[in-house]
Image 1: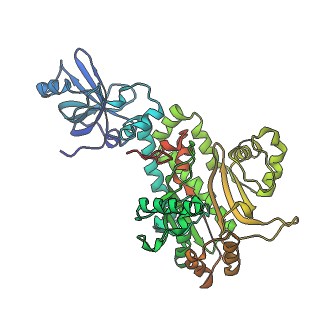
Image 2: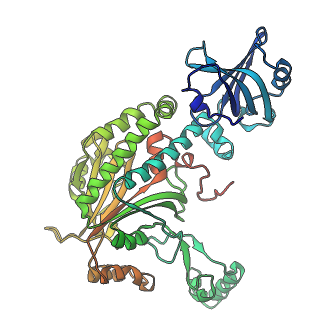
Length: 486
């Protein structure tokens, strides 16, 4: 008999029909006459109770049940057959009265890593292949699934086309150079060239210049992508509205609770959108995602509220129901400078906003989500559209960061430079190798249009919604400096 998911059983009519339950045992309580087994299959937060009454077996195969009870410990996988009945216990409406049970996989308690009552997050990271069986990570990964559906639903309802950006690229969308190299060249040969270069007076950091990349797999130097934005722009200028949703990679040697080396990004790109249109969509998008989590993941959200971060539900509800404040970077700096004595990093015009500044804007000054736009040119990427100089001759670009209480930046976007000459000048100003960007410049040569877009780090969103302290705990197998286990 095909098993029924526990989430469906718990909302079913307890009409006595025979059902099959498959899952993993959470607990077993064996009193003198009655045995209670809690089984969870991961389909929902709650477990279902299997009950066997020795004094009143009601036609159950007692010998089968008693034999298998000896093997049942925490973590054992079982297949149980019984009748779905009303439950007299508080907190559950139905239970399964056992007729038969089969142990599918034993789980020795002396070696099972999840036997400890209080397990630290670090300990569970070391057992990442098993941690989804805990309440915390079951809830995290169910919510992760729902939020992926929410992203696709939001854009599909608004006429966007889902596209896949390449994971291997020869261009650097961010311009920071923190990219993982992809090569089939012999690392031993490259090292040998580096040694010879050092002996010949070349700086070791410049030794890569003598590597013949024409002999590499792609015939040129290639890397894992840091963003799908540039490729998304090419398709937006043909399909009008597109979005990517896939993995990106950063070789940033940062070992903090906020950084990963491999993570998913959602990056919409819209032709004929200016910065105001971009900001409108970002606000609508964030509110949509948070509302989805609050309504469709209510059971798991209740767990996060109780066990992970008290107050998380009211915080998210506040963001959903509050208009986003929009201020320029210059206005933000002037406002923050009034409170510089409170900050570790003193703010002045031209400096990047730190998380402490972003949170102070949202939590103390405006008490709402805040959109900061028109950032200094030097602080942002080459492709962003430049504004006219201000009264003091300072140059800004049409970029925006969306800040939310409890986190800081959640999305970042901009209006893109659609003028060929201006974009070319920006590239040359940064000393970029134009051989890798000619195709990108073609968008401005042939039928250029105003266009805008933004990016949402999926793991950052999940960390915000769940209240998890470490971003490594919202992805099944985190990748970070010195961490590539499993």
